[in-house]
Amino acid sequence: MSPMTTPSVALKDDVRRAFGYWRSRILCALILGYATFYIVRQNFQVAAPSMLRDLGYTRCQIGWAFSSFALIYGFGKFISGVICDRTSARYFMVVGLLGASLCSLFIGCSHSLTVLALFYALNGAFQSMGWPPIARLMVHWYSPRELGTHWGIVNASHQVGSVLILLGGSWLLVHWGWRSVFFLPAGLAFLVSAILFQRLRDIPESLGLPPIEDMEGLERSSGHEDGEAVTLREIFLEHIFPNSSLWYVCCANFFLYIVRMGFFNWAPTFLQEARGASIMMSGVQSMGFELMGALGGLSAGWISDKLLRGKRNRTCVYFMSVLIVVLLLFWWLPLRSTALNMSFLFVLGFLVYGPQTLAGCAGAEFGSKRAAAAGNGLTGLFGYLGAAFSGWGVGKIVDVWGWDAMILFFSLCTAISMGFFMLNGQRVRKKLRATQGK
Image (cartoon, rainbow, N blue to C red):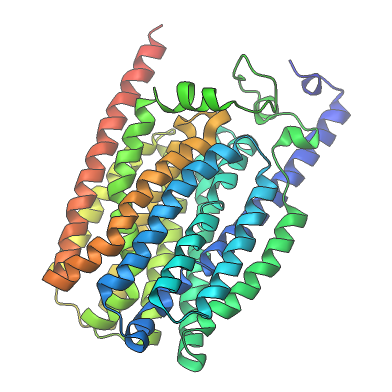
């Protein structure tokens, strides 16, 4: 047992106060940091309709930029996860935000589609350094019985960033043009990266604190010293390749991200072209999708922790079964009413982001505590392979068959993703029954 688990009562209180202080400080820094990552990420989507008009590109051409970003981001997220499990989450996240800030600045200065796509793809590499540090820190600072709830809280930060850029970016677009949507967020991200460097730290052991298992009276994994870096061999041969539960989550996330990133990339353009919304109104309606997405992620995390006792897969299935119905209604009803469009987008955001939040959480848990960032990164890789298709592929679908085909395609992807969550849920239940029967 660690020597810090049997001190005097007074020392125990001091340790608990220190642990609580650092946990709260790191949580707030993660929320601020990841919200800012999205400000220098979704600004491209906000500017896309104006870029289409001003630069004369087709939806399919802009879709290639979305796809290149998604591919770089997806592979980068897995690589970043593997590296982050063996380095400091603090430095890793700061470097990623600084790089994303510079990419946003260069995109705002560009005129060629090739240059725009190049820097947007490079932005994907730096953006991939944003979430793996969060996955690493969350599983080290929070126990499994509270992880889903707090994961949902931090995950909601990207909706906060999305809302800020959808509203603020739309205002900048109207008053100062699309290039300003890249310049101002770049400056903000540079400032926040300095704040992150000052506020963030790594896992509890790096601060001389006991691991979360000692704080909560839980059983520790055997065979490893506290804070000992996981080896590459252990990551791949023990935590990744033989982990069938993790691979099921990866497959589910592939199809889920087609839907999530389809709305993320194309909502402003869809609302302006198919539903007759103005630039500002498309930003407001897209904001509603993101706001309710934050609530959906928080709700899904709380439901999986408190009502379903950690059953992430079952929670995802419940959310997605309703999502299919709402998507079909959204396609079937000829919505020209701003209020109705916004209402449907609110509900869609809630239902899409609930499973998206839990997929990342499940990936980190199935990857194990020592390889949480790698497990989450692999889940993210599969998700962004799906997102890559939602860029070029959805753009092509819309160019050929129209916006209705996009909604029907999203319904099919949701059903397939739900099927993988159901398969994984059955596997996890069998494993639990076998364990309890021993």
